[in-house]
Length: 407
Image 1 (spheres, rainbow, N blue to C red):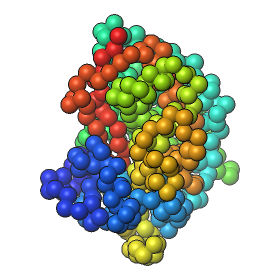
Image 2 (cartoon, one colour):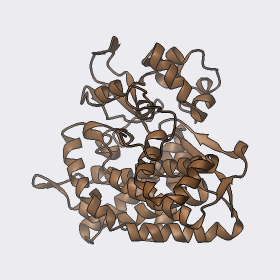
Image 3 (cartoon, helix red, strand yellow):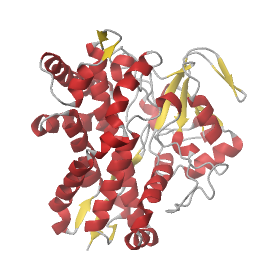
């Protein structure tokens, strides 16, 4: 990923307390010892890489800073700011992807418009479709005795479910999913990132205009007809909200599914336990969410703000490291061990406060359905080549290649 200064990705990390790098190979592959070190020596670390940022690693600090709204603004909510010259109101702020990229009051009314579509009851209506997608995907590779559980399974499932929820046909969805995958692959490489983001936005702009003229019984129509007071939501905000559902809902959920399959493929006792005791699924999914939390979210200070001995200056980037918080030994007993039956699991994988993920019920359902379908059809599996496993880092961490063998 090339953000602005290629040398940031080349020079070795001198000291994570003053020079951490979310894209450093050692951090991406195993951040646990780095988080432990930082909690002891420097619980709010700092770096000058990628434009500079601060990063809390303790549960209580991440919780407290996530609630400092809007002093720590979500208008630019990515872990890295866009390269110079790319900032615009279509790339950051409410038009880019409210409610995630918005502060109150826009955050409030856009979130309220989304919530009815992502309740437990609403999500349950998607379970049968999700199960069908999983079965079809497994059918496509089960006779081979091997597959890449990331690219052939997890990364195929979440886009298909979201395309279905949005109310798009499969052909249009395939093109759109390709753009999203390309967007994620290029990271924030200026021209290419902007090109794919505008392709996605232009696609949804046409869909929103069509639904406003000819509403249907689908998600895009509901947002297109949503009102704030007596006025329809501004079209550009609706477009951003639609794009957000697809982009934000894809790599976060598939990262957890891929991580979970990798975990069970490399921890045979846990795999065997899930096969023999299906009653563990609810607690096991929560433990996968805690242990393999994918998202580190960005905030920017709007004014000088003091917290725990640190003074954030206006414009400073603050990274809410939810994964590190979920490994804090002050909160979780034996945090670096997966306990499939963990009872006291107050993880914050979905965030904290007003920006807590609106799609959390959908994500939980997709993860559970994906893993249960996998275990039902493929109970015995291992990693084919540990050296071939590839982990992606940055704002969303997870494996992008999980080659497995099964019988």
